[in-house]
Amino acid sequence: MSEFIKSTKESNQIIIIETDGYLNNEGGEAISAICYDKMKSGQNKFLINMAATKVVNSIGVSILIEIIEKLQEVDGKIGYFNLAPIVSKTFNIMGLTKYSTVFATEEEAVSGL
Amino acid sequence: MKQPSVELKLPIIPNMELIATQTADVIARHMHLTEDQAGEISMALIEACINAFEHSKAENNVFIHFLIEEDSLVVKVIDQGIGFDKTKVEIPKIENKIGKDERKRGWGLQLIQELMDSVEFESNSEGTTVTMKKNINK
Image 1: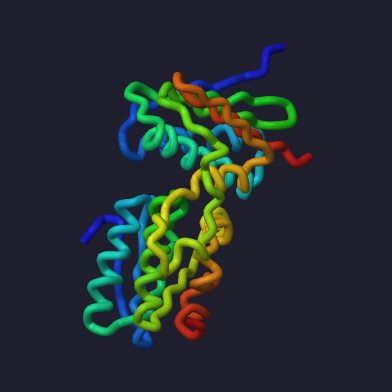
Image 2: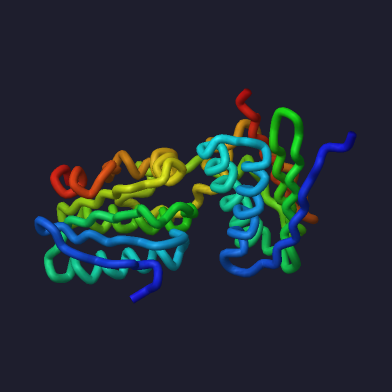
């Protein structure tokens, strides 16, 4: 597993991926590898815990757009929680919040996705 | 008195933009910028560096100049690449990317312009200088 992925777990049929470090192209691909692998076995709900990801770039975030697109094909959803303010602002500027959801906490995310 | 400045020379190596953001964080603390302002400067700087690394086809280094002014921070990202025509860069919209063949990337200039207070591009066949300014809220 990539060092960028700190942990993965399942709660209420949602896969929760905890990241650690810079969300660049490699980080984005590490997230997408898990999502696409889980989608093969029928999972279609994902949450990303970004508490330890304070820095992102648009290439890494673009890979999240690719995941959103793939999830639309299987009526799936993705959301994020514990975002740093600049990460949240970046997601807004790039429009991710039109197609996926930012939550404040894990509890809110698991119940709200 | 001349305003203080900081200059960096970055080799074109993956993730080297993080060196620039670490420097920006130190300068932001020196200038007593807010956490939001510091984050916005770092994000804009990352995108400007990535553009210089990936799109300029520059073979040498990318230069970052931080100019600490009384009421603003000016950041210049300078490459010696092939240049680009800003008028030919389309404004990205997620609606045009989701569910379509369009590539998902191409957000750098949009982010830089949204996050900074002013942005200027000077570009020709010998290189590009992106000049980004963040005003200090007093």
